[in-house]
Amino acid sequence: MVIIAPSILSADFTKLHEEIKAVTDAGAEWLHIDVMDGHFVPNITIGPVVVENIRKKTSLFLDCHLMIEHPEKFVDAFLKAGADLITIHQESVSDPLVVIRHIKESGGKAGISINPETSFESIRSIIPEVDLVLIMSVHPGFSGQRFIPEVLPKLKEASQVIKKTKKRIYLQIDGGINNQNAGLVKKNGADVLVAASFIFKSKDYHTAIKQLKEA
Image (cartoon, rainbow, N blue to C red; front, top):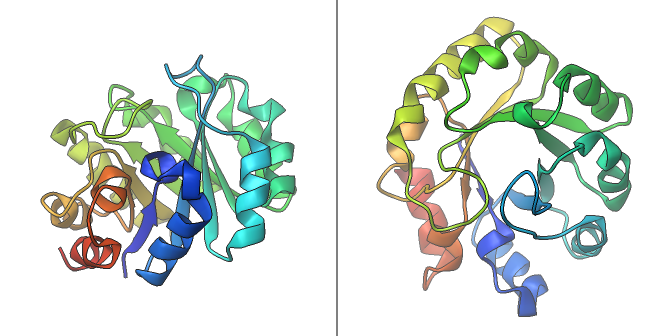
């Protein structure tokens, strides 16, 4: 069963609690929280304080995606704030495995992500150590971008490697996901779909999430 993780990047922050409740009532299982620092990506979003307040208002699985430099400096703060899973970028650290192990030893679930231009080979050996693999299907930084279909071979390869581990490792895709490509990414192995604009810019969150699940 595919998991839908609405990204609050496209939510209305003036009524964030209402937005979170709305996607929960519409059938979302996870909440995807994009953390950006203005250095690793050309945008700035939120920090642990916002995650802490979100945690107080929802029981959804909090999926924190750290698009930041030196993520190892902030792992403990996000875990303390209530993050269930922390995903770091392979491109942001010299040794992702050190950070991944720290996340897990501290009681959280850990994910590894790669940008569209990054080779899958850069994370192949890490996959057995993580709880989630995230394939970016846009260049990270802003919502509303178009899906990059060239990442599909990497998604399929990640799915094959995950199957060989015999472990429960989620395969997530993030970027430009909508009802037109959801079926395609699921066919290539994705079981967690992150969607921002498609959900939060829709008139009916329940219909949008249903379309992603049934695509």
